[in-house]
Length: 104
Image 1 (cartoon, rainbow, N blue to C red):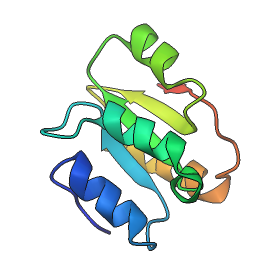
Image 2 (image 1 turned 135 degrees about the vertical axis):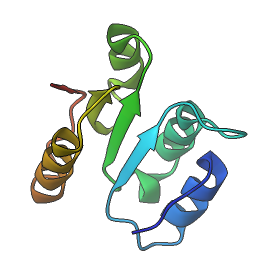
Image 3 (image 1 turned 90 degrees about the horizontal axis):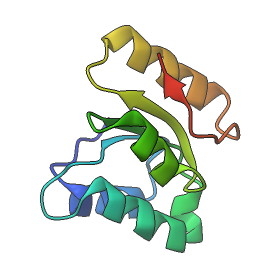
Image 4 (image 1 turned 30 degrees about the vertical axis):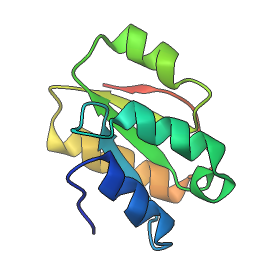
């Protein structure tokens, strides 16, 4: 497991080639989660990495923003750890099921 302090570190880790899944907030310093999603969309190698987005922002607005960006799931804050673990497990077992979903 790797941890990134911001979107720049996340992208570097993703480009490092050993990332199986990214769980990411949209609000990060310097390079935001939105920026990471844009860069990921432009890079075919990064597009293969499943993404789970967590956000405290308005769920409907964020869902509309991540549709079509290869996001496996959207988890609204506040969330419980079991929801995150279940979503991560599902994503690792079925990474091709890329759809923007709101995890309850």
